[in-house]
Image 1 (cartoon, rainbow, N blue to C red):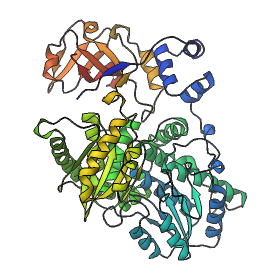
Image 2 (tube, one colour; image 1 turned 45 degrees about the vertical axis):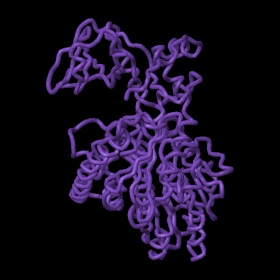
Image 3 (cartoon, helix red, strand yellow; image 1 turned 90 degrees about the vertical axis):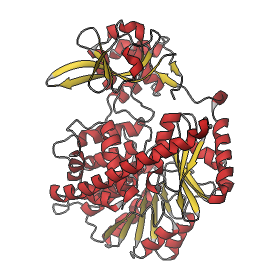
Image 4 (cartoon, one colour; image 1 turned 90 degrees about the horizontal axis):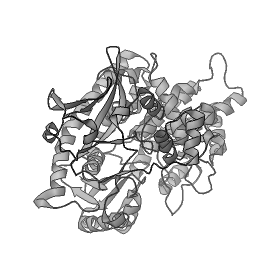
Length: 567
């Protein structure tokens, strides 16, 4: 199903004129910057030229001073620290990041606990708390979880365990856990950037801790002060994979993290992961589609701790052995995912039905570790929020995904009386409910999504402008590249091309691909083209992205067709 396309308005205004005059920014790209929240010339410079100095002071986070003081005391007394992470990419990278820093800081009594999706469930559950207590910690530090675990944190504290909760998820209205909490979304936190990832919060803790240890004279020739820029690769991976907005601090972190990921001496675990596939520069797309899924495969199909071990591996041989295990698990995940996708789509469109405003599908054959991926694919196909549910004992466990303009967590909140638990972000969430509540939940979820959907129609796909292929230039495409890294809320720009601008029908090549020759050495390509493109209708329009293709030393401009419409 192809959603309707709309062009963003392209009218001139003073800021676009100023960006063009002062920075030489093409008016179309100036308009894109404005839609990313840029309102001044200085903000444009910061967006196009991110610097580490643009990061906020970590001590602006509520609870940071108390957390750092507690960790310093625990390090000084060689207390036992247990990091309690999560099995998704954000939690795995946050666990590896904090674990690496504490080990570099001299901690000799450190453990990293990654819960099992199947044995412990998500986050700091009762089962996870029991497992933590068995490790005899003096201090538990959560990363990317814990903000809703009020009772579980109280249980740890009653057992004499100190706690620091670091998280970035929304707190519940009932309140936050006792003790020290670091979360930009907690009440009263003045931190100016609220959309940081869980790994980003852990990175802020490391920044603050390094500073206080320096002030305490902790670093010496035997225990040198770590360069925390070296851990930005982990923060970038967690940030991109968690689909937080790639704006503000997240853009700075990802920009410099990608620099680290492209260094010839990058960490052994990343090098091993990238060996499965053709060599290419590491971009946000590489992280999202090559690195992230393989790290996720550990927690989805086996044990999330495998991925932490991989990221902390100190030699290539150990890293490659772990990466091969993850690749095997990822192969299983892909095969099962394809099977689930076919069944889920059949459930949505069975008997010729149209998808509801909010899709809910459930099957005994669904694998709990892959329901999130399947939900995301249903959103892509049907342009509707989707919840995919797997059996979990006597209950159902669901993973929800959404699209811009529809807050899936609020939709779940409207069904709270039917649910055992729920939580997440506007675009992604999880839930658990009794099996008997499924019919009512399906109806209420669809109703909640419909109420957030203007005019009962899914949000349109906005394109960044109409593109005349005859005017395509390398300078324009290079300016587009300055907007990278692309990701959530900083999506790669997409443009409209009309068939009447192409003048000719395409050449067909390979296994069903189509190619249009454009002026100069440019071309437009539709991979795995629909047969109807062999002789396209004069009214056909194309949604395309622009890039510079580098092949055997040559540089050619390319437009890549992502979708088309005959309407």
